[in-house]
Amino acid sequence: MKAAKTLFFTAPQRVELREAPLPALKEDEVLVETVCSAISAGTEMLVYRGQFPQMQDVNDAFSSDLKYPLAYGYACVGKVCELGKSVNSEWKDKFVFAFQPHTSSFIVHPSSLIPIPDSLSSENACFLPNMETAVNLVQDGAPILGERVLVLGQGVVGLLTASLLSEFPLENLTVVDNLDFRRKALQVDTERLKVERHSNTNLQPSSFDLVYELTGSPSALNDAIAHTIFSGRVVVGSWYGQKRAEIDLGGSFHRSRIKLISSQVSTISPDLSGRWDKSRRFETAWKALERIQPQKWITHRFPLDDVAKAYQLLDENPQETIQVVFEY
Image 1: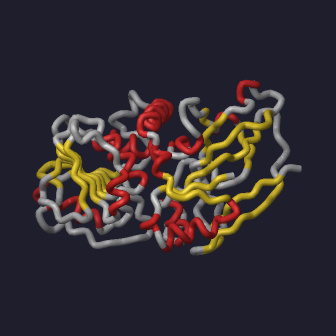
Image 2: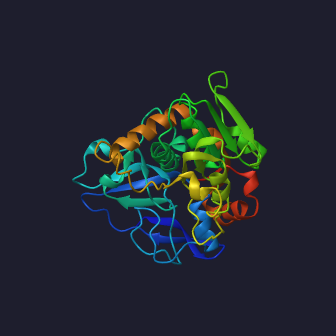
Image 3: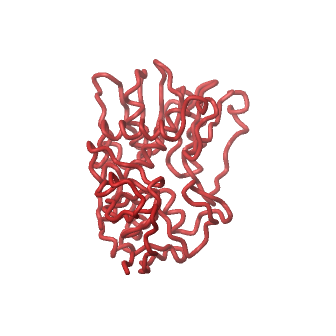
């Protein structure tokens, strides 16, 4: 009987691999052998550090409560190797994406899989969840011709969001991150769009129409508000978990008519849901991945057996990383 190795979060700052036999393949299921999976440095590090709220779902792919021990992850790319008797033969040897925890192999119904376009490598496909998030963020912010836009945070989601925003006819795009190599990672046609890169938020206050808070730090929300003009929008894409910070809503914010927009990829904005669904958004995300090719932002690759080293790196030296992936 075939066995699979799966990564489990077992306690704060503790991860381990557990090997267990896979169940027998049912007639309507397929066996997928994992090729690579991407670590979400935001959400997964909250799980790793024990900073996630109890009794709260994080992703539609997980319906159970978050508690240790927990197999977690949602950016898995693999190859369909075996088919149940009733499964269409077209699935055989197809490369697919799945919202699965980090695991060497898994059995699922084909409806849980998303075929990967032939034009994309497996490593580029690992970015699908974050690209879908970036598409959702841009849709929720709804940038307008000639606007001034600020993106706080140039981690993977910030880089993807800024890359999408750079395709709009904005007046200018400003990105902020305290790490120089992350600021430089954004590739934009500066002859077409004015782009500014800053290491901190010492910018002209109240000067941006649209601000994205993507740092993962709740205190950055004060900076986002401070740099938004009258009646501007702040899109909050960070998930803070149990982290807290004092937010100053007693100053100019009270008269500013600034809109604070919560943005999370598990749903589609009600303003768009009559025309958009998850399938259409995935198609948009695939096309965006083809244009942007984010594989260039992978800074570290680890074999699955080195799970402890991967999370220790992200916990202790995040300044050295952008995207970390497991190879199988």
